[in-house]
Image 1 (cartoon, helix red, strand yellow):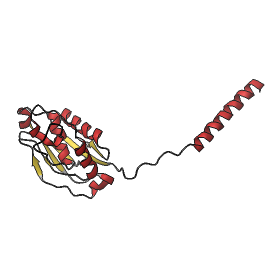
Image 2: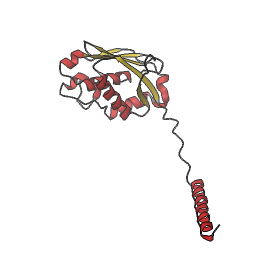
Image 3: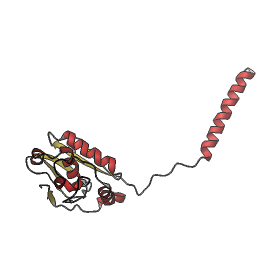
Length: 190
């Protein structure tokens, strides 16, 4: 081996040893927060024809705004905690918070759409009921749970800070597994 090759190998080995030593003395990676348990809730929208885009946007809104509960589409034939159906009446939903292994129903009513209410707001609002939020009527457009009282011009499908906090608290440390679902059916007619 030539002196030049020997120096290159030696330099590479020294760099490798230095990198390993630096990694060994670096601060350890933080452990995951045990208090941040994520509750996964499955939804079945196979009977909600015509609402697919609104449901997807409503789910995305909740998933982007709360960190300890995750809404995911159930595999075909799998049991879902949230069953979503399209109806001809007014939107309505069972008040949660829904627990894994339990089931609630969300009805997305065409009557509200025919009167000018936004489909995505309706879907996000009804999912909010499943997550344990009651109506806050009357209320401004900035409150997702104000529902129809915000008027037909309101398209806000994003929960405000108070609504996000209430859902976060309902599912804190995976507690939704032990907190019973309220079970009342809330009808969102004006």
